[in-house]
Image 1 (tube, rainbow, N blue to C red):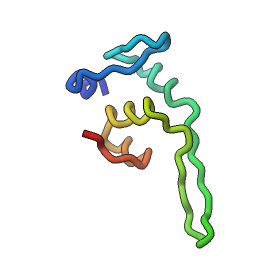
Image 2 (image 1 turned 135 degrees about the vertical axis):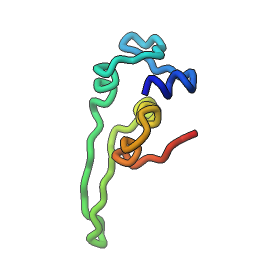
Image 3 (image 1 turned 60 degrees about the vertical axis):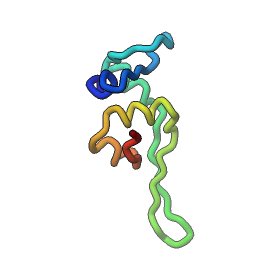
Length: 79
C-alpha cells in the first residue's frame, strides 16, 4: 500500500485528520471498522452480497492495497 501511495504521491488522513503518506497498519485496520457484509436472497432466489459502509476513503485504501483485496470488496482497479 505504501509503495502505491508513494508512486501516486497520495495520502490519507491520519487520526487527527493530517495527511500522511505512511499510514500504520493499525490505522488502516481502524479505518475499516464499520464495514459490514450483508448477504440476502432476492425475489428470484439469487443470493446477493452487499458491502455496507464503503466510503470514499475506504475505497481509496482498497485501491492502494490492490490485488485480491479489490476482489474481496467487489471493486475494480481505478487508474
